[in-house]
Length: 62
Image 1 (cartoon, rainbow, N blue to C red):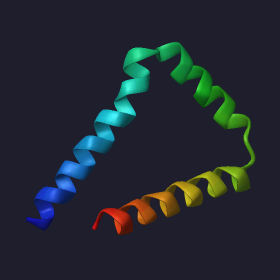
Image 2 (image 1 turned 120 degrees about the vertical axis):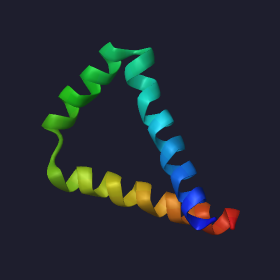
Image 3 (image 1 turned 30 degrees about the vertical axis):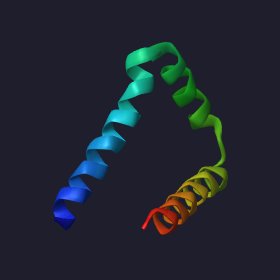
Image 4 (image 1 turned 90 degrees about the horizontal axis):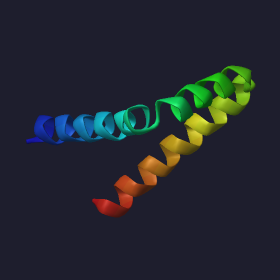
């Protein structure tokens, strides 16, 4: 059961990640161009914030 939930979560993540390049490839490309210019520490901050929000959502849901 745990593996099934994990695979469902991965599948949903892939669907969400694939929506922007499918619907608007130009916007996706521009976002990556801008990402190259961003400082590494800021990218780490964005990643940390994203992980913390994910953990909080998991705590609220379960």
